[in-house]
Image 1 (spheres, rainbow, N blue to C red):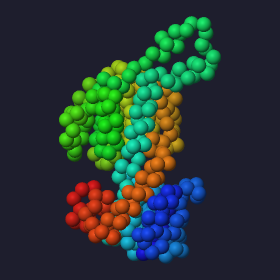
Image 2 (image 1 turned 30 degrees about the vertical axis):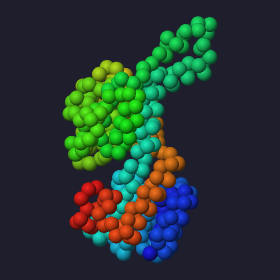
Image 3 (image 1 turned 90 degrees about the horizontal axis):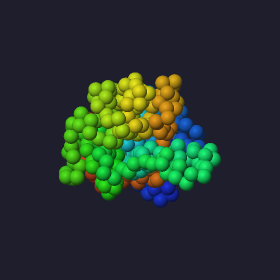
Image 4 (image 1 turned 135 degrees about the vertical axis):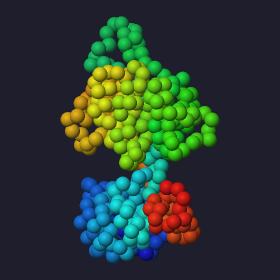
Amino acid sequence: MKVLLTAPYENKDALKELEGLFDEVIYRSWKPHGRAYNPQELIEMLKETGADALISEHDEITAEVLYANPHLKFVGICRGTPSNIDLAVATELGIPVFNTPARNAQAVAEMFIANVITIMRNTLPAIQWLEGKNWGEGAHTSYLQFKGNEIAGKKVGMVGFGAVGQYIARMLKEFPAHIYYYDPYYTDPNPDFKKVSLEEIFSKCDIVGIHLPVTAETKGMIDKRYLSLMKKDAIFVNTARAVVVNREDLLELIEGEKIRGAVLDVFYHEPPDEIDYRMILHKNVLATPHIAGATHEVEDHHAFIMNNNLREYFHNGNKKIKQLVNKAVLETIDEI
């Protein structure tokens, strides 16, 4: 089998491992290209290379691409959520689609905690104050002006308790912090993590983190009903997807200074529009440009996870692996 690889596989061991699984691997990462490949570029590359399969990260694998290549033995998507492929068409054509769940969970969890601490300890205004040469003779000026809070002892609520939420919970447990979560589809066996209602998450927690995928059920789910319950000194964090939160309601919360602050890594429009920038530039918001999952190690993770998926499926005959995301291809799969 000949595989076209456009996802980054810069870890040499991972690339060598993949090459050992198939007859030929044609490596054309999107990164030197400067952007993800569009449908026409993918169609041309698949035709030119005569590839039997495709492993991608961000490329646009539309219905057009799939109908032009119904012979594909599989498509691998090196992402936690395979949102850049038309899954319905892949399933219709009988093309197995694999993803790499939790590839960036460690990265997102670390940045979640780092940015929450940054807000709670007033780190950025303290740095700006120092760089502005504001330190006079008073030895305790900064000590009094920028005194912050610790995470230890705080109540942290997770809306959605998948891989990212669980990574964060395990880390914060050691601070120690009190962990609460809302997830109707999952119950954690760890007694240290308490399953509660959405109303309890927003009304009781000092830090509220959003960890939801975008579905018909979750789009716009977090709105004024819940945001209005937050405590005056609470911090709102979204490192998942912007559209699961009602933007106008969140903006009203932030601009009305009804909470202590917000940590935002995702926005309705990327690049942001005027309304997004009203949040980004607010003094109580710590905003980053969708980089919570952007570490060099994430690429290593997705490469080895994908390799393992493909080895299990094609070489070990394990047709029930959880990373096969189009259920209709194999009726035996029982979990996504």
